[in-house]
Image (cartoon, rainbow, N blue to C red; front, side, top):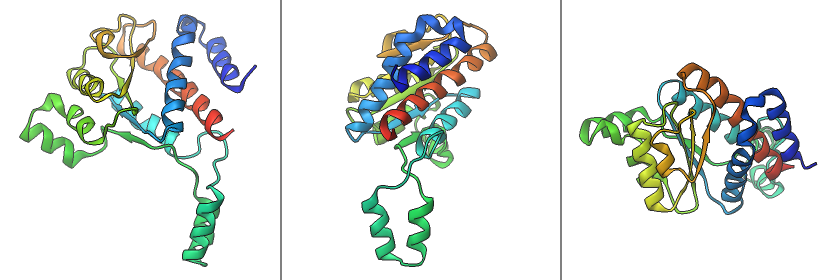
Length: 213
């Protein structure tokens, strides 16, 4: 059994109600892995509790999650060469990061977009600026109907990003614009969010193991 399969099996053993999403979760992890192998990045957005989840996902990708991520030897050497003092410390302490951006985190930009353009496009405008073909956009919405997340997904599709949605049982309008839809089997907001966390933790573990071994 591969490490990715083991991580997924452990998730489904703990949350048996997610079994029907086995192939979908695996597909999402593989899409993210392929994006990173091709030099791309991941964008993430959501509102309320899903805003916190977006930040959480980025935190697991941008630094070590469960495994070791030492810097590449070439970068370690350059750091030591540039600064024999600080460079040695940086080479030993810094970790390889997987490029990920939470679209919820830029308050000056978000308020400018909301004030100057429209509140519904706070994430869509950032996808215009950040997103490139081959990147990933992960949109979180417990209902599947959050307008600002939907608008971001539409722009992402137009720009050639792969779109991944984390939502509740029905999927809502996200069904239309998500290449990969992880619709956990709950409808109540709190219960949907309770299932999103172990799902994206498993995905981040699978990505980390594949990229860094």
